[in-house]
Amino acid sequence: MRWRASDGRVLHGWVGGDPDGPLVAVLHGCPDTRHVAMTGDAAARAVGVRLLCVNRPGYGASTFHPSSHGSVADDLAGVAARLGHERFGLLGMSVGGGYAVACAARFPDRVTALGLVAAQPPGTRSEPVAALEEEIAPEFLAWRSSIGPDDPDDASLADRWLAALPGPDADLVADLGPGAVAASVREALTDPRGYLRDAALSLHPWEHRPAEVRCPVRAWFGADDDRSGAAAASDVLAGLADVEVVVRPATSHLATLVAHWADVLRTVGRPATGLSD
Image (tube, rainbow, N blue to C red; front, side):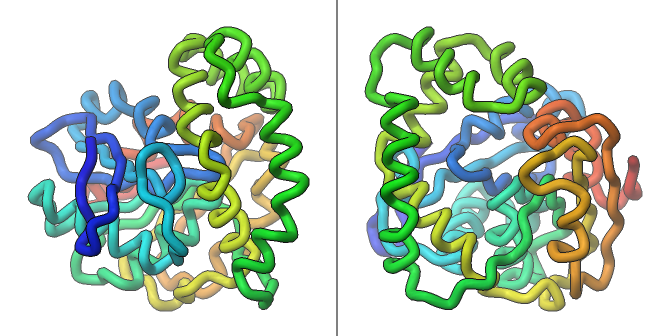
């Protein structure tokens, strides 16, 4: 689906799950897209939750512009309102955690609960975002070239992508099939500016402090996550007033969400029913 921001930019996203349920808006990782939310479609229908994920600028058909945590949050809240949801839950996956915190802080009367899954802690760099993009571009572009997102062969592209993932995560993603994997990779990597903006912003402190978040927060970490595991929890959660943490044993980065969609959605989408493990 596509929407227009107030300044005319295209916002490219996906809506699934139960169309009559409360909304959970997903803020994807990096490099990733709305495709991660699609893996939760069946669980969302079973739980009775509607899912929304909007690609950040530069991913898929979302118009690139010099975004910030706050501008992404504003775009997401605007789409939620267009879908008829004045109140909604938030789910920030990995790098999406900083954007989710910004959205919860900026819209305290609209956000009912915040879920942080394998969230990465705020950065500490102070250089301009453009300078950080320039710094990380050579390594990223070399890696992107090794993946080859322009390859029209779905199977070959999917194989290269899966080879770059940790084994348990690769097994989960492989179950989607080569066509779905290739489509996700192309959407995430065809325009390198999406990743570069995301990665540069992730090196900065978050735009909003966790102390600004008023809603209940549940955080999940995987004990076997080599990217943002339980050791990062104190840096991610410092300042949150109402937070509970679950560390899933023998669980890798992507599996912290994809293997546990139903639990996460019950908790974030229906907080009045109580927090579950």
